[in-house]
Amino acid sequence: MSPKIENRILATPIVLFLLVMLGFPAVLDILYSFSEVSFENLRAPTLNGGKNFVKVVNDPEFWAASWFSLKFGVATALSECILGLVLAVYLAPIIRKNNWMIAVLIMPMIIAPAMMGLMYRLVLHEFVGSLPHYLYLWLGDSPAFLSRENVFLTVFTIETLQWTPFAFLLFYMAYEAIPSEMREAAAVDGTRPWRMFWFIEVPQMAPTLAVAFFIRFIDGFRVFDNIFVLTGAGAGGSTTSLSIYIYLSFFRSGDIGKALAASVILFCVAFVILFFAGRVLRRDRA
Amino acid sequence: MKNKYKDLPRWAVFAIAAFVMNFPVISTLSAALKTNAEISRNPGLWVNAPTLENFAVVLEVTERLNIFSYLHNSLVASLIGSILPIMVCFPMAYAVARRGYGTNVIFPTVVNLRAMPLIIFAIPLYMMYQTVGLLDTRLGLGLILAVVNLPLALLLLINAINDVPYELDEAARMDGARIFTILVKIVFPICLPALATVFIFSFITAWNEFLFGLMLTTSEAVPMTVGASFFFSSGGGGVQWGVAAAVIIVASLPPVVLGILMYKHISRSMTAGAVKG
Image (tube, rainbow over the protein chains, first blue to last red):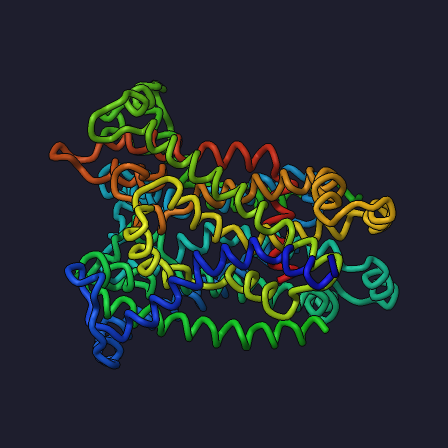
């Protein structure tokens, strides 16, 4: 067997699997997004040009969902990275000697986001939740965490608390990987800790910071599980992310064409983001 | 060391961070150990009279909410979703690691899936599954969980194969071994520890998945994460909070146990995609 044929054979399983599981759905996605389709005529849809796309673009809820996803992605990624960096750098001296602390700190990200959402449903509940209980006890009042005004802050905090460990873990590893000669040389030159942090350690960790921010942004942008089980996109739709918008258009409204058109738009946006992020991150590392 | 209390502020910060981030877990655990009467009387963290009553109710087989079938579905689908990626990725990982094959299209495509909002494939998958009869089956759910796990499996397997000395392949080739013999008899056994990590990490991810469980199952193949949310919809008499809390604990237990046993390896796999991606 020539190496060329061997390579093709080695690639066959994954390529076939991807074509069936994602290639075929992607084609369906595009085809059906240009069709008049409902649960009744699923098998025999009729083309209707770009009508679905017009419907999506004219739907204020779509723009609200896009805005929510963007805002949520940027805000959570930013807060997770800042908190994670602070924890990693500040706690590094004691973690170095006590490795088990990592296990305690990364526990939240081992729990399913959906389960985390359910836990918060219990924790924040007006009558049986422990948090309102203590707030009433100590402050005499407790905010309505899931009301329209507060719900963004609530889901933002929940996401941040669950995924700060991810940023922390990345930054801790990057921090420990900084060559010790670098710190020693700077220390010999009399560099103060604060300057050491900003001018030596942060630049050394810059590629990791960029990657962590990007991953957390993407995950925040496509958020579904925890918000869905906590609010069901509730509080007047103010926590509808793009993923939830697509889900609701499909299952609740049965407007398959609209849901698919939104999927195709999301696909294109994700593709563009990935393309540029890939170029930037690669250049960063080179 | 100047004095032994120097690290005290750091320990305090650690304790606060650990407590705040794990607060919902602690609170849910405490609710699960209380009777419903005690939960409404005393919603705080302290449990006066711990009871396992709620867990007993959870494990009782009921007509409407059968937790054993959810656990069974999750187990089977997660096993498919963690073994299949290894099987389809292993040959590809070998081609990438040893020959640099597929680094232009296949490798970046798979790795970028990590960042794709997979809901864009959910609706066409729903239609496809309906046509071929995979809707609401464990196999159907397992297949898409395998897709979710592909990017990390491929990355970790490439790393693992890179660590296997190339001389071993060459020696085997000299002896006349074909590519499959090398793959199955030489590289695969050496990679077993790495494969175990991939398997466990994939299993945790698959077990924790919610979106596809929600969309692609209705009754027969409902996984634990989706089943747990059913306990929060009140069946007339209001939500039984103690039972609901116990369900969450049961649903979260398998990944947490695996995570604790393997945390050193898990932390490496969780960041592998990020550092190499």
